Image (cartoon, rainbow, N blue to C red; front, side, top):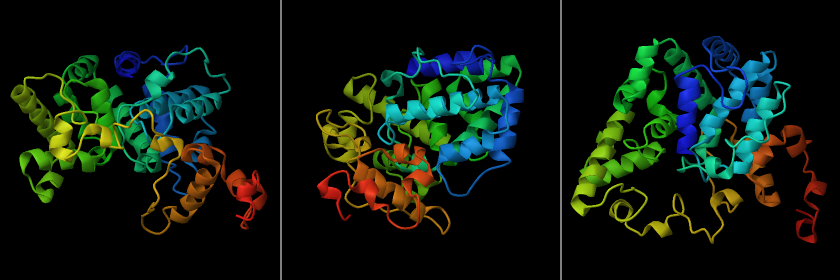
Length: 339
């Protein structure tokens, strides 16, 4: 995965090339086209992320659609348990094929080893992919407007890059920002993407209050995490310590790593993304943000033992063809009769 991130850095950040395409797609004009159709025509209505993206990209050039697919590939590199590698491939391929070109099936950039991810941003990541994509587009436009020496300078120093990134709207709110920092500078930035977890660790090791931790910027949290890790590496005489491995995990979590279901799951047990949903799930948000809509998706996903992304990818007409329960959909076995 990290090799894939470095490859993306070479072809997209240090040049205008492409990950899957033959011709360049990471160009400023194509990014501007994405800005017009994705950001300026943002769709806050009902429907899955991919369905809405298809409508937004409908009138764009094939190269712009391919660029969107490659950006989605980058967004999908880091998350692990909230979405399966299989679902990631399905989405990337679907967006790519809107260009009219078949997806390169022999690509070694979409293997499980690359798409299995490195950290759990939480289920909320799936609800904010639109915002992450918008943030990504703005980041790339600003980056492409820099001179070549400026780009090289930023990519040679993670702290300079992180400081520059703060100018992009939404930087401190986007988990994808944390993923970008890890992908490009894995030695200095952690594979901890959820803001609450990052602040929890800082509080535990530094004694800061919750309010003090929330006042920190994303880059300041990065610095705190690096300081903590380096201090503990010196204290224990161990290099490359991980906050989700011993002994750091016990120090902030109070239990052994193998007991944690968020990052270090026992391979012999089903993972969360194989549809072993929590017994209690709370969908929250202000009116109009899709709680009722998503409740149906969750229900169908649980009944049919599929990932939430697979259900969203089917489209609303198939998931809920009418306002009355489609009982026939669930009558595959006697257990579902009358549900």
